[in-house]
Length: 109
Image 1 (cartoon, helix red, strand yellow):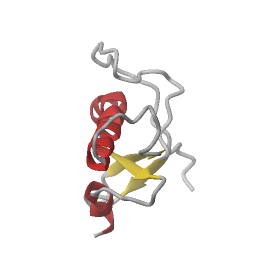
Image 2 (image 1 turned 60 degrees about the vertical axis):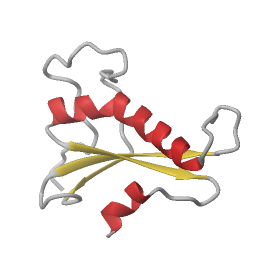
Image 3 (image 1 turned 60 degrees about the horizontal axis):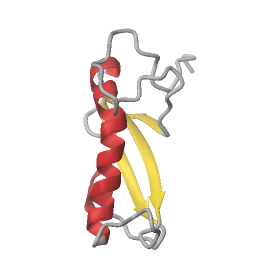
């Protein structure tokens, strides 16, 4: 193994000031892989599992809940991954009921 870390590196360049962007040096994503979307391109994936019936999920449908959680992950990590890591970011959001949004199936197709 080359000894390279699979975690995003700390920001080396200025990331645009935005309260929703996670610029902390200790920010970590769950998965780093190559070849998910394009051969040899680096992709970071972050997993979230939620319970649709929880009080914190006030969305009327489970599809709305999936979209809400995906958007939260994108706001937190997408800009940094694109601009600092020069990679792509894909949030993987699942429900405790076993429901999976179509967007989570795309990497498997």
